[in-house]
Image (cartoon, rainbow, N blue to C red; front, side, top):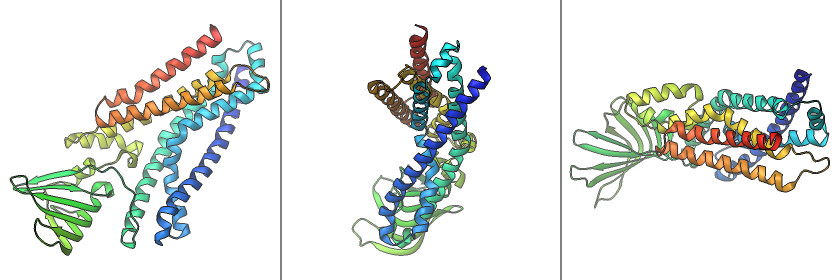
Length: 360
């Protein structure tokens, strides 16, 4: 009987999850399309089909970011629906404990987390790279690429001391859009600034295009191309400028190993890796939170304050997870701690509350 009941509960959970996913995908697509069209379409760079494709490329990343909230609402909706039909009451009357009939929901949440980490995340990383590439390729037509937090590079080769920054990083860090190169002399004074439309890392030099050179006290000059020698290797730059959001889960371990071999900080990549590993358990924690506010029997109406408390608890957990993840990426706390501690604490609290409610 337990197997049949568990399969029924699991089927109800999956059906509700699919409906929520369809709704969130539709709403997210419309919102992102409106934002993208307002930002780019007015410049006449993209057609409607181009904007639709650009929005579709970013959709997996939006889905990955919203999946914890989707899991929370799916758990609450499914349990409340079962409660209103007295199905959970019948299950309790048959001697089935809360942990037994919660197992299908916990398994469902865990599987959703696995699919998100192993399927949705690689699609999100690929889509984000493609979207950045498309926006950057339209730069000459007047569109401005989306702003990203890009670290500055410093290269010292002989007497040459240059700091390099960019608006957008593409091709794993070897192609910079709206690049800025600031040259210093041996005394630390700025002697030259180069603003380039793009900078491509070649073997032993940066190839700049559409360059504006500014020297102290001189009139700026325009050059079609310019070369800046460098001792930076492409592999080093790729790891130094790699953005965790554009690296698929399957590639993170290799990226971390290569970055360590070059002496590059891997805090952000490690935090992303552990966050994706802990995601299934985060969704389990969200399901336990949903259970704490949805299992109390109410034939006609669930307590609004209790439901609101569950939503706020899930929101607080999500905010804490994102905040601690930022601490891990910056190196304030170890990446493993940043990714796992909030999840483990949330699961322990959810299980404790359920034990108190059901078993006293």
